Every structure is written in C-alpha cells, then in structure tokens.
Image (cartoon, rainbow, N blue to C red):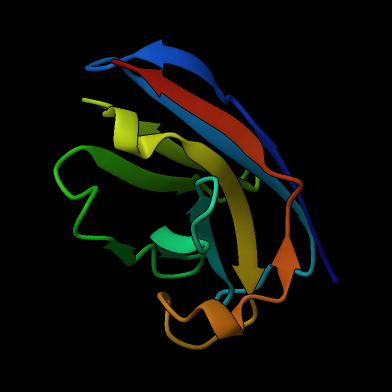
Length: 123
C-alpha cells in the first residue's frame, strides 16, 4: 500500500511558476514509479511526468518538456514538480500517482492516487 498527499496548487498568471509536492508513505521501493497526471474539464486524464524512485530516471510529456522538472527527495519521501512558464492550457487538476513498477508513462500501471490539487493559469 502507498499513500499519497499532494500540495502546492493554486492560481497563477500565464508565464508564472508553481511547485507541486507529493508526500508518499507506505511501501516505496527502488522500482516504484511516482508520476503526475492531470485532468482538465471535459478531457481525459493525461500523463505529465514521472520518476523512478531508485534510479531517479525521469520522463516528461512533450507538452511540458523544457518547462516542468520532476525530482524526488528519497530521505523525505517527497516528489516535486516544478512548473515554469505556465500556460492557460496547463489548467487542470493534477494528481500524484504511484506504480510498483512498469513503464513510467503507462497509466494502467498506476494503482495508487492522491486526491488531486487544482492548478489554474489565467491568461
């Protein structure tokens, strides 16, 4: 079992920055993948970024490359998503998720989800 709690969402103007954090507890092992997904109104949930807990290898969606950075603090069991140069199309509920293994981008691998945090980018 893994428990996830997100924090850090809010309202920001286009071009601004936000930092999202995900505090993880429970069975976190080296093969665990922690990821961020987002869901905008009327749209399907989509992959944003993910990190392998042990190796630190990362994957980012093409839409956020160069603007978002994902990292983790193994000692504190916290994953962070730094979001810069935000655009109105980044507006969504952002979810932290965990998978025990498998490809980092694979939605179907993620069994554990946080409650979500709202990110709103105004134009």
